[in-house]
Picture 1 (tube, helix red, strand yellow):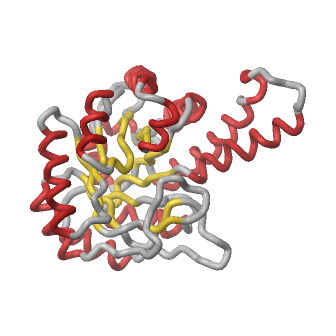
Picture 2 (cartoon, rainbow, N blue to C red):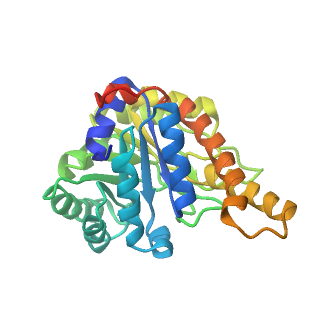
Length: 292
């Protein structure tokens, strides 16, 4: 069932679990996410970054909407890291049920101003809005971008930002990065900072850079308001590592129905683990959508 982010995360926030937001850039990954969510009876978010939309085209969103609509579990289609009002307008036209306006690279006041404009536009047609305050780092294996140096979210600023913009969810910077961490850098989520933000901000919080972080930190983050966790690199690594292996083992095969199934299963195995870790497994019944 297709839902807005606000409705989806309201339940997760109240019950202290997080919904995985998985980047999709082809029909194989989309199918893996939907099928695993149905298997695990878990809500799920299909998110498409502008870089990914440039690859698959606007028509892909219609395919995603149809898959989400027919799904037996709650599903949101979300614009990941929209950087302009034009990105927001395009997403609305394409049929997303949630958008992110990322003005985190701007000054505090400029971030508020652009976010407010995005909120006004999206809310006028019933679409949820995620904003970002602070900056997420950028590691290897990601095309989403990020900052060379993380600017951590200040709790008091977070409260003011939410009050002035009216955003539905807020992505916070507490030490994570997009992509994979180099061997000499150990990720560490600042849970104490997150706890302070949660005390002052009464909307669902979002954790970007969900790949390659310690399970304990991810699990504990849901105790302090994290209701959405973005995941891309871990899932894609599972898929494409297996696809490379299959291509080596079957050099004379060229049919997708021969080459993709094992890669799909590898992605699904990662997704199963993440849905368990995020706490979203067996939570679909909380949305009162019928028997699963």
